[in-house]
Image (cartoon, rainbow, N blue to C red):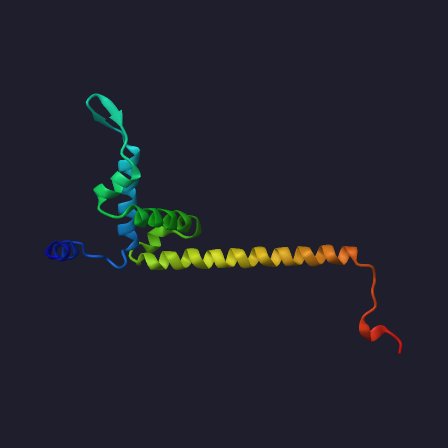
Length: 131
């Protein structure tokens, strides 16, 4: 029981990091993974899991930061958001995704009605019929 309390006290969970911190962590994590090292004359590579362990952040968190930052890079200049928390980046990516889904949906609907109008012969509306 005391061991569990000691372990729990050692690991302090940071709720949200700043963008510049996330960028540095991801950069360090990926560089560890990509750089081979020599051991007993053989060239070896560190796995992503081992690199995450060295950085001290769970792999899942680092992957999330990596993909959020990569997506945000195409949408905005990350240099302007370095002092913001990573939640701002998440919100930007989420809003972009919503807008692209809405735009795609509208285009599909318009195409549908365009195709439908091409196949329909002139029909009378209900108010055009003589009683």
